[in-house]
Image (cartoon, rainbow, N blue to C red; front, top):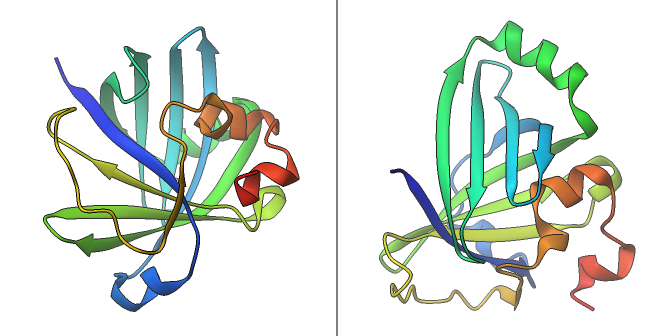
Length: 160
């Protein structure tokens, strides 16, 4: 069964930009959710789209199923989603043996920058880049669902 195992951090400085690849613009929204389960639609660079079902296991691991969908269907799903549509640009940054995904949010979430690293096992120990801030792995306030609901307060963007 496909699993997503990741750690998530706030980003403290812009030093990651020195090693960042080109960004991908994303718009995403939660179509439906319930306790520890969510269905998300994501449009990437207005060219392709993915439908993702996530079912929680623990703070770091969850089942994840992803499917390609036609971009025109994704655009319609974005209009039918619960909450707001999130806009962000995702950058990949190689550090040590891992690739970090740095999300720079826009709109109502402007100023929020989050980095995630996907691992093969919960026992993996990725080298932490010096530009990371507070770890927020398992903090529901930084989940896609919470961000789409607009429940992230201003003070949380600074890790307070």
